[in-house]
Image (cartoon, rainbow over all chains, first blue to last red; front, side):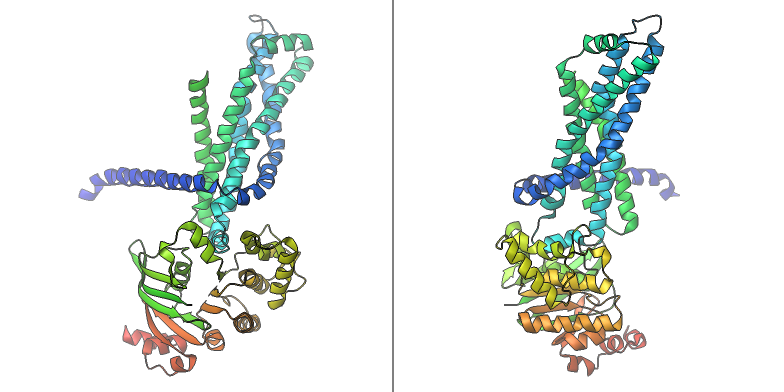
Length: 260
Length: 249
């Protein structure tokens, strides 16, 4: 009887301790990664490969999402504005929304699935098959060899992917306006330039870099600390995707408060 | 020059794996550590290179206390120790050549031509010449273990630690691996610690055999001595007769 009413409190206590421990592990991992950054000779050699894997290989999915986002935004803007707001505001809405919000956030969420899951699964498998231990026995710091190149590649390449996604999203909106909304190019461009600020692009790229950091840091953390077998690898992968997706939304709100 | 374990204790949560292990691996010998599955043999091996940190006790390698070494010195010490993993732990994305060259590249003291020569020598020692361009997914389990062995010896370490080198192999491949262990000990003069539960293997390769049981070293002696042991737990294990050990329990 006593156990029944104390059980929820015990669960809350356990959860609090586990959460605190998880933050502690991430802190220790971050400190270790901070030290490993100095080992440029190790991670520098792996960087280009990771930039290609994380960035270049992610372009197709990012551009696919951006193109359809641009099309839908253009059509929805026209639908909303009809009869009330001049049609050229379609260009304004497409430009502002893609560059400030949907380009970086949708790309970030897609890459949280693609890149974050890939990193967590790869490092998790390396952990359970003792490949990370093998690196240690060969005299390598596995954080320098595996973690730093992925995180640096994420910070450098997410903005590149998002810049391409922004461009394709706006271009898709423009092509849609031309072909389905009977707008002319000068009309669309007029709206696009109306409230455009160069800062919008900077804002988009800063967000993208922070998303790149979050996705790769979380993916490497969960992968690196995988313990067990195949099931644990699956769990780490899921956790990496969920936590990095949540972090992207939190960071999105943070940058809006901090920079806008 | 030796490996010394003094009073090693290691627990995972409430489960005590190693209670009080004291053991010395003398220079030039091949010491086999035997024991039931889950008794902590691999934990013991990992404690030597600090892949796992003991809760208590001291590990000395060449007189250096492994537990007290700063990270850089620890990495330097690990380069003197070759480690052969139970399932080889090869890097899937790297060719056999690059797997074997990995430790040499880390040392930074050899150019690519010298590394290629050393990799070739190491693969020849494990009888895998011509496998340089293959990937781990393209070779058999026994060949993977031999590549793992080549990787461990490529840096010409003073010590070799083997974690279950013959587990899961057929009898013929097991004999090949045993022969390689003996050959490496003879030709490279390395000191070896082999964790195994394969008694045939242990008799073939070991100069001494230690039995780990319930977190402690229960027996240490030559292969001839262990075969004459009167201890029922030791006899039960080496003869594959669990009823002898159960009588003691």
